[in-house]
Image (cartoon, helix red, strand yellow):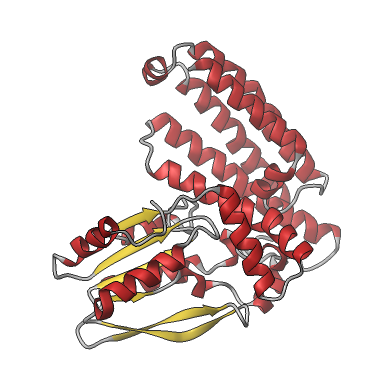
Length: 339
């Protein structure tokens, strides 16, 4: 879907209003794709029947991002109060007559969220919420999809989207060099996650692949926590991170994480022997080549984490690491050969 307010898009929004009940419409997309523009156009067309509640209001405060060491990654999934956002959506879903609910709003000129800036009245039938991570399957964000009555995903040519982001960052005070670096190092890694979440939300998967995904992302969560603690240990900083883990948990986290990593590989190996794979691929035997590639990548991630050389976010690291990119390309080639 594009960001333009076509008659078909407006008709689809009006269909949500037809029931006469409170409905929540989500608009998801990568940064710069036009989420806010479409939401604003819809609200203007629908008037008092619609209210916008952006996800961006749940940015963690800059002071908290500094404390957590995440200021350079502002905009990543873990730089938002995802649980607070989910709770607000649930309150909106069950809003009582006469009740006013207040939501925060992000002010770009301040680069901070302002609490209580948006008043939501009970007699507004359509709530439009827009943001990057409405379709993300990470644990903190996964409940969002269940609260929304419908989700639209906007797709835009990457070069156009990046140019918009560059101009936006420069408009709010960044130099061209700083804006370009932010797009490449922060916006694009986030965009990749968003696109993956959107694709996953539309693709039915087998129980085996669900199990593989659970163990893989659990392993990545453990390596992220491990890296945070390893950094604290190396600099002799606070013995506890913001998630409640302490430095003494390092070896236990390593055990949990490596076990989850190789469990994911075993489940994938079982999956490629299944009937689903035989139906989907003409040459499924090629998929066995992915198994050693998975072992190589996961083992390398844990070795680097143990040496204190891993970025705290393994997804961002993988996107910028040449070896990880080569392994990813090899997996893609093998998958194509198996088709």
